[in-house]
Image (cartoon, rainbow, N blue to C red; front, side, top):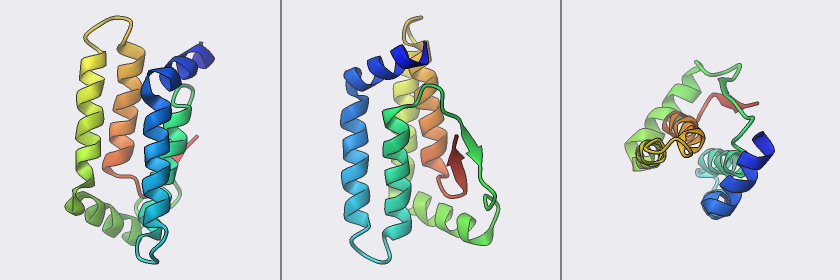
Length: 122
């Protein structure tokens, strides 16, 4: 079932979103200061390719000082809008019974994109 969900996800826009996350992540990695943020965006891209069957869990350094500081910088610089967009798309997908699995994936992405540092995808 997860393979069918992933294929439908890719066809219905997941591939485009993943490519955009990869491109923006690569652009951030050009500068030394942007490398941690670029790595997180590349992590989003990988998660957008295969969201079904994946879980977002706290990593071993999820409560470290550096993760907290980077998460605050992430939110303050406006990346919370990605989380809001995924939450809105999740609500829209959940309006139909067929869209509920896709809505759940958007909610996972919203949580990951709100506080990405210290999270791990398994």
